[in-house]
Length: 353
Image 1 (cartoon, rainbow, N blue to C red):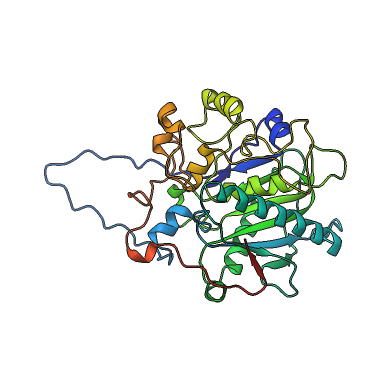
Image 2: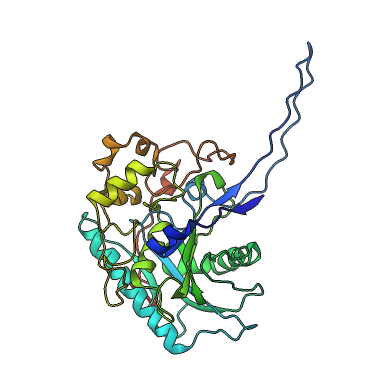
């Protein structure tokens, strides 16, 4: 059964302008029978269909690690029922903000000695990295961004349809995530894969609203919000009150606010509460860099013991969530040489930064 966590507290939304969503899969407890002196053999488990995913993919999800070549496919959602659609001018603005966000991501990675290979829509005509789709389900938007399960399920299906063998062959990587642009006002959020999900909810995507519901009327979501949500795809946790990550407690939040006041996973707004649209005035702290796999360690590992349970790039449910067991038991989720990151290859209609 799949449900969504409730939206974060309003005060948190006002602070960050974005909401991460968790995907929960609940299993029922199997009643235990009393053992008899001569028990009959246990029934053979029903074989599960082969998902075609490697063990590593079932741990990391479709986006993998930020240090790997990854495709970001932009999908513009038109809401035909209300007439809210994406104009070419609005798409051009979105591409500009996305380019600004990716440039900032690359600059931040370079401070940790890493060079990113993110492929994204640059406006090239007929690019396979830019799609338009009209969903059957209604788009809500609003302050809670409580989109319907029907819409989210539909976006799951669209993601699977767009992630093809031909796409992987053409672009040289099977690491892919989706950026769904919604033509309404809302608080952006990301649907991430958890290691506990296994082959379920494999495709990861961010829902980015046209307008920031907490800013002035008609103010667009900022490049900082784009960057924040993209970082969720690769394992970055929220570092503010109400975070769904088990190790983010009050002590860690206070520490981040005092030690890394410009941390992008704490807030996407400038110090005065405004947003910037030609640049991102934030930073990826050593803590977030560790969670992303940009660095092998961080000072916080000694200060906050729960961080020792974190595998960079991987989300896991809290131990008491009732979720399904983790599908991998090694550090990187892989079990053979084929699980190593793919080498980068040139891509038509894409920009690698």
